[in-house]
Length: 419
Image (spheres, helix red, strand yellow):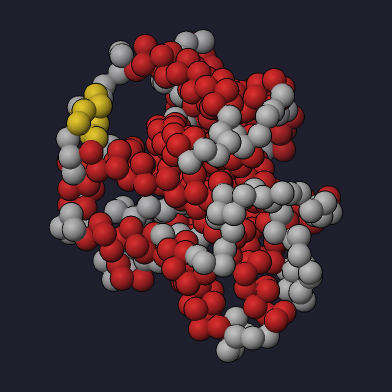
């Protein structure tokens, strides 16, 4: 049973075979591996591994979120690097062991994320089958894991990252670690908030929220107010919204994590302040562009979901998860535009919120768009199979996939040179 406009699908019972899940996850992990090694170890992965080494040898956590570092320490103790040193002294060296472990943790997180995306894509397989149904979940999963903004307009200036809102990151380990949690929290909250739920389900949601906060709190910053607004509007419209799930599954664990993180961050440099457009101007100035150019980069970053909403919006099922993804994306953009971190050089930290929300938007847009296109193919009532609008949607996704392939190439062979 569904409510028109805000419907979560009833599980159709179709699940991918175990071998397919392993194959897709392994393929996506193999795709990420060379880029993570090439650009990640030179930039953010390398920086976080220094934090991990410091925590491992001092036993003191000095950064607000350190789940990646703690996982690296745990995994490093489980890998027999001493035996590997007999094969090659390099494999047993201190720097190599930390680097190898960091890459392993990132790739495992990427594989888990791709598996969640694949499972989510199978949730669309609830209607009469078409000849494309066996291929769609795999193709859509790979696309969702490699897309980037449609960056064609800035290729000449070697600009693929800065100023854009890119959901694919090969350099940042905490982003890749939190992405499966982002999908899990959004989908589960969308499902649980519309019905009565058990204490166990709420507790699991709270645990995922807590882990997300300690992996990277960037997503929860816009997600909490987005869900609050959604709950208020839903209640005002006299539709069901489970406030107990919101309070105990989201708000309370996020608040607990925020209090602890604020205490830890008090000794660090950097201070959050209200400074409209300050971070944006600094970010856009890196490529000598006016702040207004950000409008074009936002459109390029959100091209496929925007086009799908425009051309297929009336036929798509606007699930709660998709609506929450868009709301979180909007709140994330507002926070990025209105706030700034002073006394530290990185002014792009606040952009991670909308980047993570955009993953949800892209995945849920794929979930919503495919049944519409599949139905058009089956009925045969549209020109060119899926209609002109349908092909515009497909081409917009293809533009972001091609840009994602180009980003991967540059990050692998020219790491960080095209940011």
